[in-house]
Image 1 (cartoon, rainbow, N blue to C red):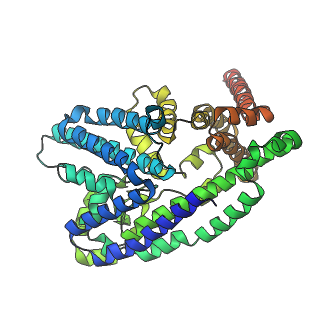
Image 2: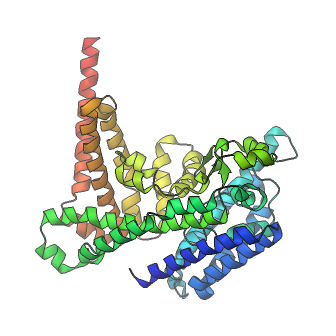
Length: 460
């Protein structure tokens, strides 16, 4: 485990302990806002130094856009400007500016989602008001017009500033104003999440020792190892990567649960990234102290990773829904559903996701492969898996699971190697097996599907 990872984990653990202090000793909303903001700025400065000017400048630019530009256009302008700034942030060396530290990149990534998401929230809320011709915002929208200081506090709140999870402004507002943190099982929720972290850490250290990623870039790996070994190496190498992400994401969730962010009654149907679907239930329960004491609560609003699902679900499509769930919510709501040309939705969403992750070609080779993989999986799912039952379904599920893990590993190595030359060298050394198998399965699947249609037509 390198120094950056140690610092990263250490800061997350510090934030978890601070959360108990923050939730227990501060009740005044004004104090809670400023303390969470000051601590957040301190964390960002600790990992960024003078590069903290990047996130501050990004927030100030978006503050002007959100508060001054007409609501019909503020979300589009915020999206374009924020992603252009993110691109500039990652290419500062070409402008004679020192490249920011790795942790600052993580801060800037989450901040981009927050400010753009807030612009969309403002836009959507204003449209609802215009449609309903009302003076007050509805439950699902913002409680009051957003000011510059509101945006500043939301952007630099210590919760999620390093690695997420993404949460809406309304979720942040509820943490400050709603009484649920007094009754939600914050300590128990934190323990239930964190108890598996030692297991993830142990497995991470073991796999990192036997299957280090750097080994795949050595001459020995390509000259002395067989094609079979190089193909096999993908699976434990990507398993090691997933374990690293599990540790970071679970600890980040614990920062939220310990502070009480995302605590909602189960009856309000909270969803990852979004918060409650039934805000009328939230308001109803918040006004009844006796009911608040007996209500069941969860933290599904900030649920960002499902390690069990990532490892054991059968299909690639369902596995994606278990991974970085709050960011996927952001992509689904603010990108996928906003693309008017439906056949392009997946491709555009994966491109924006790649752009958000970075400028390296590996991100695009990995994420932009998804629109080609999903139709193939869906095709075979309809042909064989959906109609199967009993032992036949079990066998097919195992086959799907095997290919899903291999596909994830094959694509994921591009995400890890980053450089196009390193990625293509690796894929070439195993004869681009992932691309070949995917194309072959798609062609064969289409042939089988057409044959079935012809047979059904004859029978009819």
